[in-house]
Structure formats: structure tokens, C-alpha cells
Image (cartoon, rainbow, N blue to C red):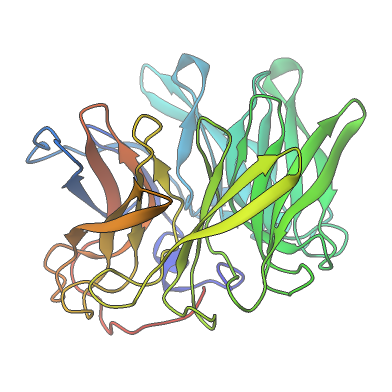
Length: 366
């Protein structure tokens, strides 16, 4: 499963850098720009500025991007460093001579506070929320909150320990927050079907209570990316597809109502020119309802290095359009990952690895 072990991707970023381009924050990878409908021309070049370089200690391997806080402070997580390589939560504060790193929390690889954080989201009161892939009382991961205190300190508060049973196991991807302060996310394992769950952490006067919104089964599960919430509260996500009834992946929606949560598969990839195996969070245009995302494989006659796709509402369903196919020879990069950035002008920006893969093969969940 993803990031339970160091893979070629995590190793290559172990001593990573935070880079910023003219439009977005980038990891150590290539960048592409694809036009959406009626897009303004994308800039031909972008200059990268190194804001901060991570060493091996105390934190390394920033894999899940950063979020911006007041005063230009950046917050993020790393996969390595911390206590016995359990990862960190860090902040980068701008100053006259650059950015200064501050470690807000060190995780242990299998400690009670969790290990291998999957990115963070900021609450309305300055607190930070996230989940960890492993660790906790049952070593199945946790949902945590970092509560700010005096002098810039933070205290970790465990909101839920996953047991590996019906509540799920190994939460993956960055959770999302709604206006009420509830958190939503997915696990890649656990649940009654053993294929993961979609969970909600409901805020109560005394804390948080987990509610399982959907349990995946062998007909479609093992999600490898977090959720996206539309302005109407609908949740969108992806299933990677490996070993499933639809082996090329699925885009799904969960609508919440008084009668409960309704799960709907919106599109099943075919594994050919339309793409295969989506493993990143989706981007939703709240004005048009169009959904954007990337696949790792497919395109170019079905043997390409992935696609940029859109799903446009059409009647009671959605119609897929391939906006860009990464060349089979790797000329414009490969292994697209991460959520696309949709600008006000309709352009899409994302990241990929540069060059050509050494041995392009179709693989399962990481």
C-alpha cells in the first residue's frame, strides 16, 4: 500500500526541497500546464525559487505540499525525520534572509501519536488537522489535531485511533474540513469489506466521533488519494483500481443528506486512451460542476504515461474528456501526481516527474 514502505518516489524526495513557481508550490518534479475550457494561454516558462532545502534531520521528505497561513507562514508535513523516521509537522516563516523552519511536532514510526502524516489542513481557530498512515494505539493510523498554545507551541490531540475493523485502517490523503468543523477522509484498508472506508469525524461538545459514510468492497475500493469537497457539501474521490472489479479505477461521489450518505460511481476508466489508475485528489469547478483530475497510466493508444481528464455533467451522468495525454516516450514527463490547480482564467497546473521512466510498468497501489 502507499507509503507503508519507502518507494522510489519517497526515496528520491528524502532530502527534498520546497520550490515555488510563478503559479504554484512544487515538489522536486516537473511541471505541466494544460488548458481547460476557454483557457488563457499558460506562461511559456516559470522560474523556480528555492525557499528552503530540507536536510536529513530533523525533518525530510515533504511529499504532500504546503498550506499558507497568516503572515505568509507555510505549514506542511514530511514523511521522514522526527522520531525514528516517523515524520514531522513543520512551519516555514519568511524573514529578511529567507525562510526559517520550525518543527511543530515529531512523529514516531509506530508511536501512540501516529506516524507518517499525510498532509494537514488548517481550522478556523489556527489549529491544524491531519491523519497518519500508521501508529496509534492499534498501529492503524490516527486522526489528529494540533492545538496552538503560547509562544507558538502546539499540542497534539488524538481525535480517533483507527482499529483496523469496521472503522477503517491506514487513512490516506489530506482530510477536508466543512464549515461546521467536521473532517472527512478515506482509509485504504479496513471496513467490513477490507477495502477501506470514507469517514467523517463529527465535532461534538466534548470532542469528535467517527462516522463511517461508506465502506468499500472488492467491487471497488483501496482508495489512494484524499477527498475533495464541493461548495454544496458533496464529496468526490477516486479508486485506484488495482485488483478491483474495475481494474482501471473509478471516480465517485458521496452526497450527504438526512437519510444518510449516498455513494455513486461517476465514471469507470477503460484503461485505453481515456486513462487508467487515478491516484490524486480531484479538483471541482463549483461554477460549472466540472471535475478535473489525472491518471497515472493510459492515453496515447492506451500505452501512454497518463492523462489529464475532465468529467462534465451531462443529464444524470458525466461525460469524460481527455484534455492532455502525456507522451508515451516521456518527452513531456510521466507519473503525474497531486491535485490540479484550476485558475480563475481556466488554466490547469500540476506536477509530474521529468523525463522518461526507466521501466514503465503498470503497478498496484503503493
